[in-house]
Amino acid sequence: MSIHFEAGWYGSDLDGHRSGPHDRHSLDSLPPLGNQRFKGSFDWLGGPSGTSVKHLAELGAVTEELDRQGLSLPQDFITYYSSANLQDILGDPSLTCCWSSLSPPIPSPVEPGAFLVRFFRDQQDCVLWYFYLRPGSPAFIVHSHLEYEYEYEAHRSGGEFNGNSDIDDFDEQLEALQYCAPTFEEWAYRFWIENRIHEGVESGDDPSLSKAQQAYLNHYR
Image 1 (cartoon, helix red, strand yellow):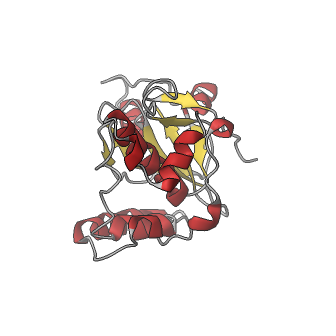
Image 2: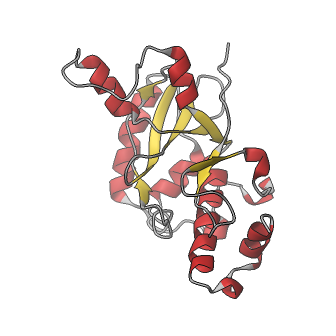
């Protein structure tokens, strides 16, 4: 039986149009995006160009481990992360000091056979974003306040150091993981446009927003 996750979005306050940074927002309350733009090509960022050798090596290591579990990273993320011009673009406009951070596969604490792969985190680990991978199903995006690499290391230490949760407590772990997007590109677009809007509105340069950014902001006005 597949696990059902509660859903929510963590993002910037859009200059007071929503409650503060890292507050949870109902997915139903967010502006609709329209999935016609999300084809894995990242045209809204100019498309991929060049290759990041460093990130290709990281992807290779994670892919090798996932292959042994019959799982794989989504192709849109591979396109983004291996591209020289796209690889770190989400961290550039972020007002929350977030950056890419690819982890090895981490067992799901709530579903045997499923795995997490962290791909993004904020500076203070208030929120971390993961792919949720299960056999026979498309990957989707979840977020959590828990750094699961550390949680499992703490669990394996036998009490040598303490984690921030009980990894064996099903209810606690299910509450700590929340669904936030069906695909990486959709998550990336929402994260990117919200931070671009916050950047423009905070500077008082509201008219400089693009038509898409203004329409997104108008949803809250």
